[in-house]
Length: 161
Image (cartoon, rainbow, N blue to C red; front, side, top):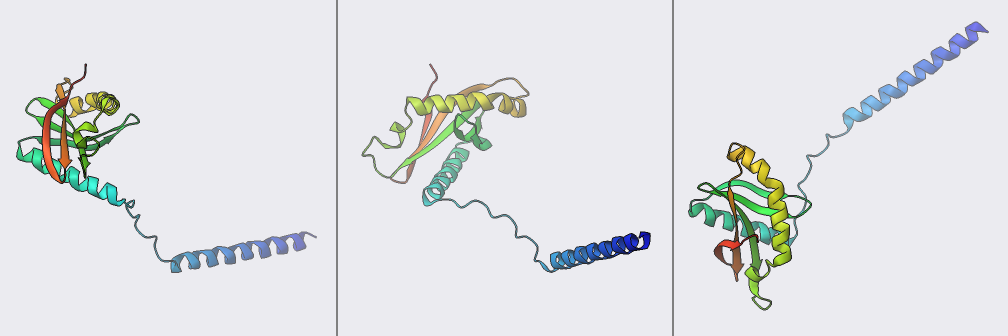
């Protein structure tokens, strides 16, 4: 009886070893996984990316320094955070193909301003820590609006009441 049990245990161990060897050989033949692809962007998102890059070039040409891009929170997103001397500038980039509904600047209504203010309040301590040694700087909200493809920089586009 004992010899029979030992023989059965040996057979099971050999079968398990063969299965493990097959799995290992199969895995070695498999090509390595492809590098993860960046998420696909819609045509509207790609247009927004181009406008954001153009706004960044415009503001850098005016002497502002980039601190961060696309700061996301649950409240909203800050397109660009920039430094203008000792002032922290939160920049909203907007574009409209036609001015039928008021244009790009008019699209930054009170609700959008409130969302931007909440997102800015979320990021202000982090940006102050990174770039102003923890002391909260003066801040303002600018906008770069594109009307029919032409950029316009609106300094102090809106203020918090």
